[in-house]
Image 1 (cartoon, one colour):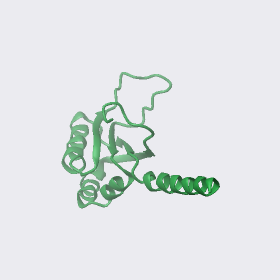
Image 2 (cartoon, rainbow, N blue to C red):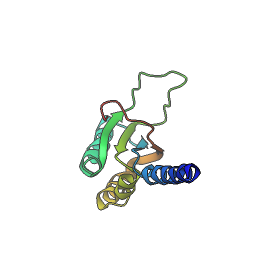
Image 3 (spheres, rainbow, N blue to C red):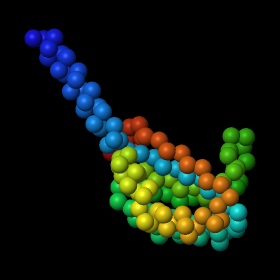
Image 4 (cartoon, one colour):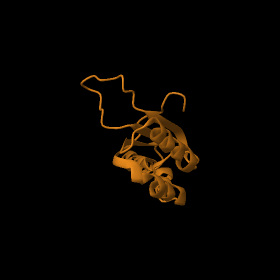
Length: 132
C-alpha cells in the first residue's frame, strides 16, 4: 500500500509540474538595430512599442530602452539601438500576444527601419523582485 501511495504521489507530482510549466512567467527581450538610428527614429520605435505592444493582456513587466552609448566595455554588445523587454504572466500569454493584430500592425508599420532584430525568449525562473 505504501508503495502504491508513493507511486501515485510521484505520478501526481509529475502531472502537476507538467501542467504548471505553461503557467511560468515568460521573458521576451528584443534588440533592434535601426537603419536610421537618430534620436527621432529611436523615439518613434519606442512610441510604437507603447501604442501597439505595451497594452496587451498578460504583460507583467514592460520596458523600452535606448542603448547607453557611454558603455564601451569589451562585454557590451554594441549592435543594437533600442531594446524591448516584456515579461508575460505565462507562456500562453506570450503566445497569444504574438498573433494579435496589434503586434502584426507594429511589425508592418515599423519594420522598414530595422536593420536587424534579435529575439531572446526564455522561461523565467523564480519571481522577479517586486512581482512576488
